[in-house]
Length: 392
Picture 1 (cartoon, rainbow, N blue to C red):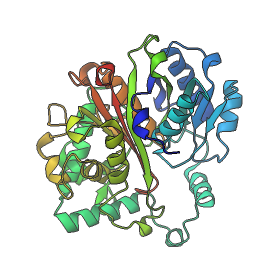
Picture 2 (picture 1 turned 45 degrees about the horizontal axis):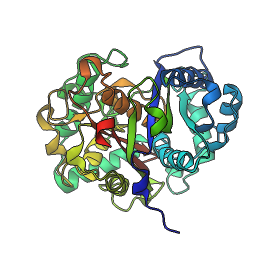
Picture 3 (picture 1 turned 90 degrees about the vertical axis):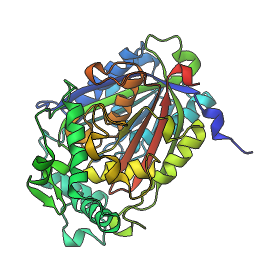
Picture 4 (picture 1 turned 180 degrees about the horizontal axis):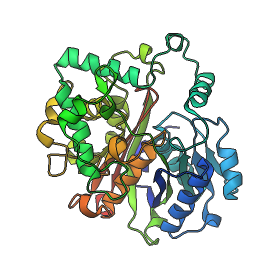
């Protein structure tokens, strides 16, 4: 029996979102941060924990993470997804959650994440050792590269060599993110930042300096997904999932077929097809910007410009406030928050923009938003196209 994913277009809506502890949150465990965000998102949706019968969650350091989350929150879900694809996980959770809702397996799905990457008691060597045990990467780790930045530096170097992308163009991404962060009181970094500041900062992995790299913060995020007919009767304006898809082409950067082309080209194409839309319809783009090269690659692979033209596309503040395309309006992983995995925060910012809750950074008249998650070393990609009620 065939099933047309287009029939799921708009069938589910995000009814509640919340973040908690983004920045520095000493004294909290990652579970405590997650629980605060989860309770706040459920309350934002006008529901209680007793209404939650679906759970999606993932963690870098625990392969069985859904079980302690369920126990800690006191839930008894009939739908559980613990798929771990790195930072794209929480956008990748959308499709199985939508299918479960459509099948009647559950009625309200909580997607949640928490991390104490900045202030946690586990030291960085212990975290690195845990990652290696979970994901040994036999062809790369013996050389002890500075991961993950070395992998993204390879992609940046390849893009520069093939397309003539410049250091100044990469720096434009970080400067634009900071300009948006300066409009967001929740952003961790809000100080001035110039292109020269980015270029002249401490080199981490050539050609990327520390200002080309995402923040290291604590933080938690959560959202609640319900069927659209139910969302209409809840207190917040529903944000409908018009299209979503996930793709993965490799794990190790050394196995990436083309360092300048990511699986976002596949996930984006499928998400647009499900939504019946294109990049030209998008008012706000929330892209996983772990490093400045990410934004250029995703702008190209998601259809906002042609392959190789990402550098030129972002010049002269084109993705900053007042530019041609609103990108990472919260400040992104580069300036707002990045607690290990950022994808859920991209989705939350997209929802807030479509609900008109952006404050000084609000994009006027935003009706359609794209949220994109990235996991591993440009490995897994997940795209979601979201819309207000009038886009159904």
